[in-house]
Length: 561
Image: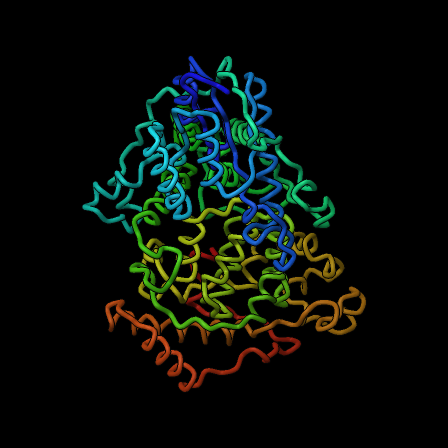
């Protein structure tokens, strides 16, 4: 058994060697002992669940599990080059950590601080045990640029609720001028691992999955090496970095996405240090004469991440409508059939369906594509609860992140954060992404749709976004009969969006009248009122064959131009 000043570095997020303060601290304090790099496979997160709507576990789709395994394999490879390795164990993480501390006589436990509620609860228990047996705990903030606790304290104990107020309070991050530890010549040795059942990083097959689990896998590979490669490729084009401006970009670009696709490496798994990314961007900005600025610049996107992390950490029930003080209370409807059709890419709107199929197959899609399908599900057409859409994204996205996923769904459903939009408007919910014209603006030939919906690959371009308007002879020639080979539209967009606006208007009025203090009975009463006030059953209405979608004036806005 190892003796001396043994350290344990517990990897959860932060799956990298570069700029990892927890790893750095564990190394510096283990000079006279051993260092144990540990990752715990939680069966609840990783074991297959045959009852789930898509391949994967009960909590994650198989694309994200595969991405995680690739990230772990890459981390293990990096550690081995430095004379160490990743020790993989299996079980409930808190219980496994306690056994490791006991068996390996650990004196120092190091892990990255995490604001997610799951890790907050888990870390409290682990820290409590460590303290009781005299184990030093070092848990630095390194997944984010700022410590959310510091920002909240500076704001009088409350989370800032607007991006601009967050920027004003946050200022420049402490890492701006810091020298980051990017590499090591070697790492302390691993001691005797005893009988704890340590293994190598498992394969998908060893976890119980099949390699043919899906007919198409995500093209994005996990790991620190891939993250750094992708980062350096992006920042090598200084003009592109300098001119980057969100929300501009082509959501239909799939062979070469119109973004960095760094989000899985930054947000979910920490394969890329946000502090290193920040420094790289600052160096580019110093080298160019002119560049875009927050909130639309690349730096602005990194700071949006910080804003959502801080707001999520400082807001109770952030992942729910009920009991969430910053979330509008809206009587969303429940319709499991409609939800399933949206989730499975069977709404009858090719633009929406192609996006959802890309999500199912790749675990990723462009941010504007996410906006389109989120709006369609909630305030745009179906009026289904944002929490249900959130759950689908949480499962399928390889870059799903608790704070950002919940924040974006509240925003896109106009339940919160809607005042961030430009220009500001009390009726921001009137601005709806058209499931027809929005995608057509970027991809008039429908190449994106043809790729992800091959059933429509031979449909003429004038009908590719509205195949139900094609004459039967055209549908026959294209080998795609609407209603047989491809579904009819589940709702009539013009009628559905009008009805959604009416409901949102009523809900906003009630929230204003009650000052946000709306209970379950209030929502039930409003739901009944909406129904009795003439809510039409749009579900079975179908567009007429030659119907053309005419956009209302209030739908021609920043989302379309």
